[in-house]
Image (cartoon, rainbow, N blue to C red; front, side, top):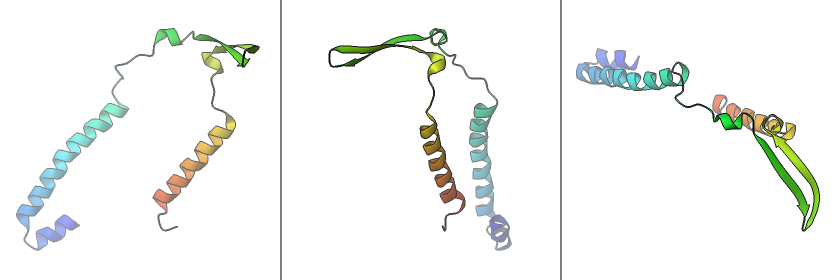
Length: 101
């Protein structure tokens, strides 16, 4: 509508420049979107992490309390941390979609 109003008022050169810059920027933005959603990533996960097995020792000063074996499948985000991240994301989305509140 802005371009149509500018064209009606005789700003033909300005409308051509606006269309040209829109096309050029669309080429750059669409290339990024194509790379994000349609191209395969060039990297591969380290195969050594697939069978990761870590040993840890819990101590209290010099006394060994317990020995822990950590596997890659046992690393999870706690439910309270997940809840906090979800609530903060929801609040940020509210500010984006309903800015006057």
